[in-house]
Length: 363
Image 1: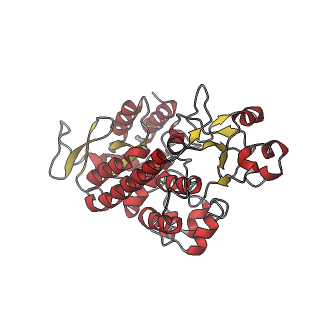
Image 2: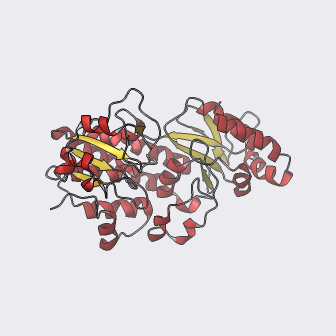
Image 3: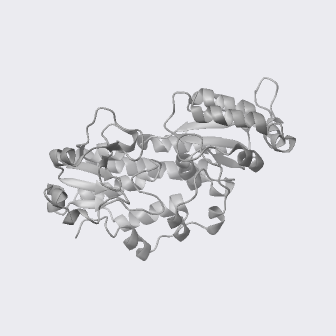
């Protein structure tokens, strides 16, 4: 079992001694029959792990288990969220309604810098806790254990770049929000198919995606974080053990020089602003020819970290940057549409210009 989950379960055992907090979890059990089947006020939902979970028929209060779920759920049901897994990035103030920025911090179940705060979670009394993303080996066991101890239903829904429409379809079913889910699913399907068609029609550029303050980390081919990169380019970062972390694999300058990329994409906070004056980087074709770009950041890194639904926007941006003739769409209009659907925000031309200041090829 995941070590974080073990610690969480130990905390639960202590917390349940407090009747006032435990009652929040117990309330979720009131509509269940003894054998776990559905009643008039509950239903059985089969999650992506194949678990049959009894959930309220009318879910109005949602907790999320991590940053991927936070971003995915915010698009479809922001007003039902009772908390966030991670504090919002400072940049969200420019895009999100202030009421969402005041939601309590619940922490996250897997990875990250913190742990799920079960005391805050129980006090928030959610109808369900939703996990979204790549499944973990022990996930079914972890979620079953937490569900049993807290009395709150936990569900997992897979999320991959190529099937975000299915992710939203499942969320729409779970939350009884079919119309809202359909709109998001249709957009994800359309955007993915559009970019996939571009990728299949071009001669792919040799590229590195570079991260880290020193510019010595790369997003490796075959990693979960490299789904967009691997689709749209010849990802030169081939390593023995691709990292599962958003910071990527650490390499050295000699390896980067040997890869000799024709294009480089730098993550936000990396060394984009200094490479033009760096003697080592100046010898690389991408830098010498001006084919290097910084990923837009706001309200999230468009290419991942975390690798959530914002990559649907990121893939459209990356296609536009690398293959502008094939990507014959207006990137401002594309970004506006995404911000309206997923952030509930009307993006201005000034905001767009600031977001993409270092991120688009010169006309």
